[in-house]
Image (cartoon, rainbow, N blue to C red; front, side, top):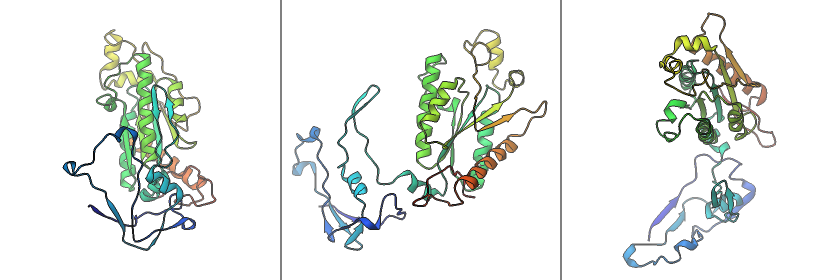
Length: 306
């Protein structure tokens, strides 16, 4: 028999545990989990070392466990079979630790900063500068770079219109997961089509998606041509290249636009500071200076607690 000791979690917020829902428990008790139908045929013999685990509470006899939390742990809320796209017979399993708990742990609000613009506009450079600036302030961020993602997750996608849309959809879904984890996700992708960017925005709660447009003219991007792609596109060796023979649809209502000021090129660090100033302003004006949503106060955009 395997003996497990349950210890009190370090973070305990009202979104998961509530003193109003005290569930009396004995010092030693069993936790029952429903057995899936697919495993009914499995034989539990002494040969396969299958054992019943005993769970022992090592603190007070009454542990504060919310009904929702107990249901999430036991699986009692798994009763609605759903179909999503081509995925059938799926069920969403609620976790006892939610987004607000993770944000409290990290002392920041998870969000997506979506940097869009032409190739050569400086998206990846600004993303790296922003990530470094956030890191220096003790904030956890992660970059989803368009080229980097195509090295793994999206390596099966081409640059045709349908594949480009799927590329952005996948990045948007991954960015959503990062934001849900309480991480500041910085997506630096061309994302040329407005409808695809809007679809990614729709994945997140209002205020959690910050669209940043690097508004650098085509002639400047082509003059930079850091990867030599414009030259290849002009020579006809690359088809469907954004800005040459495939359109780029600029944002209509982005949260922040970083324009090129004539021949003066703003440094990536200065752009990163502009972005951070925006996030600080949103935090100060929209969150009443509370580092974490307080019960009874509607959650509003608040990205940094500096």
